[in-house]
Image (cartoon, rainbow, N blue to C red; front, side, top):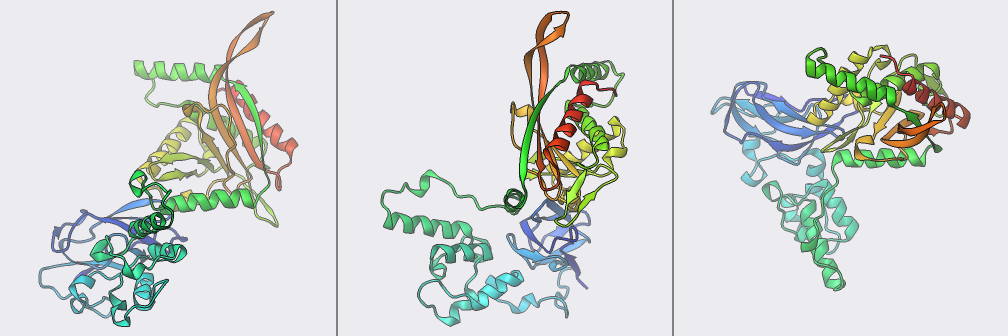
Length: 411
């Protein structure tokens, strides 16, 4: 009996996944562990490995399909093996051009869709293949999608087809507009939708205020110099970065100001007994904020290794989805210092009550003592806090504590 390839469930909040590509074609031989297809949730991207040896008998959901978790994606077995069962669509009974079963939402669109303008022959409705996203876009822009030719899998109409029709309509009614050849429309990815929604909701549903301060980083830079020298001589094997040391100082400050290490839950404030530190990570797919659980219980070396692993997992696309939920971290650090940013306003990752923005290091004139003046390296610190949960006084004291920890760093 053929082996069913099941769309895995990535976290409790994930209900559907989108197949972004197939590494193998129908009829090809696969072995256990071979990469079969790639897929993404609204938070991360993953590769799926073949669960069995055999031939890829059927691809039930093609590239671009939105598939419910635990749904059957494909069948693996031996040549000539029966592929139908009570739980599997009988693909042999479907016409060749329909031989890849669309998602539930797509099946509903195929059976019930009507164009925005005009009427079409109801006998042709089952042949109309359009993605849910493209359908919504066409309806919003008043495009008769029944007349479009799809460029997606098996002639499926996708967003780029609708955008092309929009460009043609605009040119016909507004000759002054530039041609579509001068720009490219990119569909909004799932993770970009998530980021946009989270950032908008954060600003809309909280009272955010940002305080700025700077800290003398001579001790951090000296510690960093010694670490690099130790690595070059073989005395040190672990590269502890400036960001690691800043995070270490932040954790120490949070332990002294536990009211900042909290979630605001409308009718209550949940104060945490340990620090689960979130770090903003820039990836090719967009911003991710993985949480390092129990970061407050780690020494500097363990913390450095954990932060590096979390960032690497995000960039490879195999981070645990539960770790990038906004509720996974109790406080977040966003470091833009390497980009030369001198001051910025980070947006809180709700329901957390604050976020620290770390800026670049700038040499500033300062009193060195004994009537001597010189230039001292200062790092910018930007603390955004939710005024619903934290008042200005405690927020400023916490930011001052971070400054104190940085200027008196001991590892």
